[in-house]
Image 1 (spheres, rainbow, N blue to C red):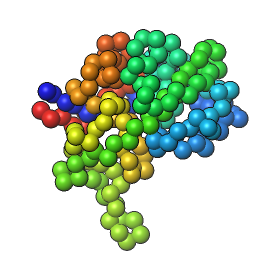
Image 2 (cartoon, one colour):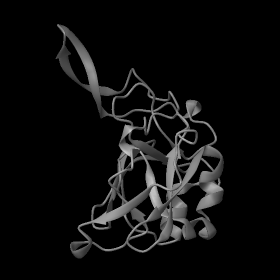
Image 3 (spheres, helix red, strand yellow):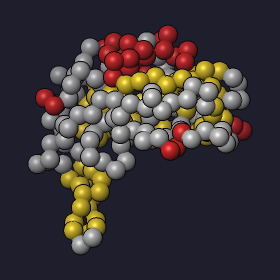
Image 4 (spheres, rainbow, N blue to C red):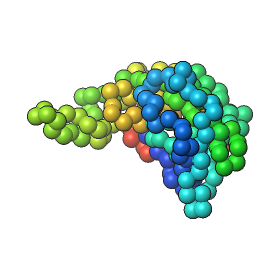
Length: 193
């Protein structure tokens, strides 16, 4: 069975969102696999930045560590994929008053195969430190039941998706393609082929 792992990125052809002035969203510890629901304020609003030169898209950019989309997409099959693996934080898109979802992935899998992963390093305080993954290698047995996950121990916590490991209805990548959604890019970082 072909298994592929992608790093999820925003394609920047769709809307980028910014929090309104009194919104303290960026003070939260986003993207670290920790729940934000206790600190979340559903009255926080976001507005579109550079609306003139962007398409609406299915997904919006706020931060590389989370996914943001219109609430209506949950009815299209995304809820089944995402529900048990992260939290849906509701908010409002100021420009249209539409409900949006800030999806905070909570699954962290320590699934890097360190013997075959190459890191970008830098000297920090006289010590050589791994600062970023240069070439990924994964241990599939350490990936759990979620097709969307993060890696622990990284300063910036990108979101990853695995395809070919789970049933189609639980495979975020396949559902994204099947529903013809837009706003995200998937950078292939590893394959078992």
